[in-house]
Image (cartoon, rainbow, N blue to C red):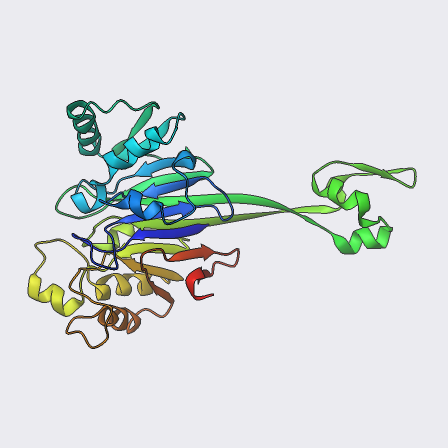
Length: 321
């Protein structure tokens, strides 16, 4: 599985960060899913190899503008780009009302169908190759996390047995691996005798705004990756108070450490945190705070960060490799 970040700022964009947008897709596949669509998301997409014609579904975590103001423009551009295939949109009733209002007022006539799925009724929906479910979070408005699960089965050949029997690689090994029986030396050989099916499961949770990480606990069992907001450091969180209902880096890091999470990706940083180490408020304070308690693999997302989740459960930052 692969994660691509199109926007990592909260509230407003900065010179280096757009507002929320995250891509989940299979590695080396053209189809993709989008989680949140803040203003300017379609501009970010233009800087990638992603095609709006290959977009399978859009998931909106909540109705706040930095997570959905880019949605109408993206839908319109997809239509003008020749999209004909129906597009699934998952979100709250308010998200659907918002889209319908814009469509009506601006007389936007899309050349493809929108398939709405109310997040309140989302129960392990099969979308593309992913099984997707949701988790209700805690924020000023209804906010959700989306759980993406990918189950795959790989057929592995028993090379040792094949060599012992004397079956040569060409053309027989490929035929057996495809599940078909062969005939060799006037004897029938069944594929099941020389193959083993290896089943793997991967789980990534992408969260909307949330001030109670413990709400993720039940569905985070066997999760490989959690993507969660870290809008503030904890010292700033204490100054601001819980009114905005966001998480601090410390709060989500403590949760991740307590559940034994392997990979934690932080995003949705307040524009106050700058990239310059000498700045009064800098992004490295968030990193230091989280690293002090979380011992797994920690990542601070940047716009256009691309992470791949391998079969071994290790998340790799492709920008650094």
